[in-house]
Length: 145
Image 1 (cartoon, rainbow, N blue to C red):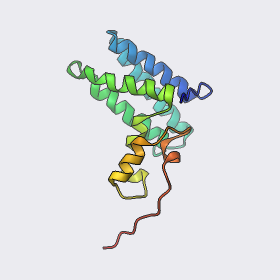
Image 2 (spheres, rainbow, N blue to C red):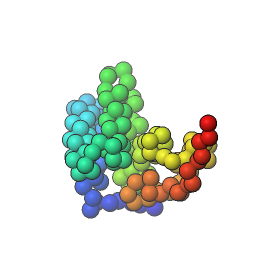
Image 3 (cartoon, rainbow, N blue to C red):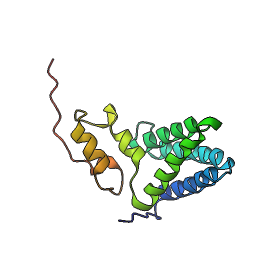
Image 4 (cartoon, rainbow, N blue to C red):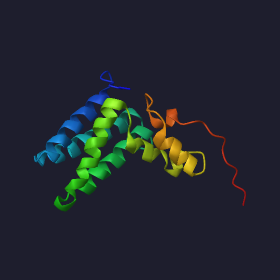
């Protein structure tokens, strides 16, 4: 199922980022630098738009930026294939692996970390909005001490 959401500014940010990363993996290293710069800009824009850095869309962009920075040193540039392919998948199909990973952080979930949660997080269909809206609502687990 295609989920091309060209009416959203975030989709355009990701499109330009994907094009820049594609240029980078095609042999034009300036693509990586520009993708990092655009991601910083996008991070600031969403922090302002969402009124804080704890908002889920801001967290996703922060960790995406961390991945881009991790891959920047020359010996690690092969890692750029991961966000390049992943960003294209997000643009075309709406499947964002980074958002799914971020949704598993303890502060973004109310249930225990289990194999079932992992399975539903990564194997559930893409949804409009963010992955937190598409995961089943669970009953809070009791924590007896």
